[in-house]
Length: 397
Image (cartoon, rainbow, N blue to C red; front, side):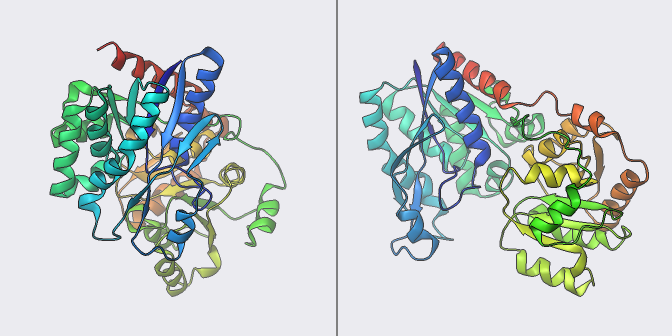
């Protein structure tokens, strides 16, 4: 079997089980395909940043198993020294220094055919340095904020451009993101689009007359059968726009809004809902088990995400697959998914426009099966097949 070693700071663990699940699902699908077809063996190097004094959540992170096997993927978790808030400039170098001895050991035991980074910064520059040292092909993947956020910092952009020059192949999660990368200065000829996957058994329209009462009981939030139900899936951070979704609620008669995710903006968002007199119509669900998410999406009339930027949000794809139209902004790969009014609406990033988009859907709701058909091309099996083919091409260069 061919052997890919993936360097990814984005990867779920016992402390952060929802962190980077989309990376895990992709690599698990590749490993499953490899086991069935004798194709690719997958190892993950998941560097864990630990400050010089490990307190709070960092203490728990420092106690994670350094080696585990999960769903067919072998995961190594070396530690690197992290300086919170101010150490971003040196993180790639610190990761490379910590991961290189492990990578050399893995290469000696089971020769590495491709080194891959699943996030462009800081993973990409670190993986580029290691791939040069070991002398194997390099693949890099961009997902959105690694380009749109870190690309605004001179030091990060410089490191990413150097890594892109070293790469044998580059993946982007949408055509729009590929264009942004080329505008930044990355060689467009190296970039190909690799769309996200989807668990099609889990994310599908679920019809159940008691779905809302059941969810209300589990979540501790009253969801009237005759009230519009909106969900917003994403980390509670400013760029996701939950504050805009809350403000829009005032213009959507009787609607309830479920915010799924955690983040630094939660206190602000709770205060905003209270100040607008909407506290009884906004529910903070926190991070939910993936088995519960399809139930909420299927019970919802729309998924609302007034985001500032994205590559191609998994939440968009998952909502569509559940038959739930999406109201979001014309950013990243949104236009590649929301291609007509069946899929949803692309709106300006303000409460009035969001409310108008939602109300249009509520006044003329599309058939759920027609909405779900908009996500038919997405699956983790397809994602794995395309990823393996990409690695094969790198080995032939």
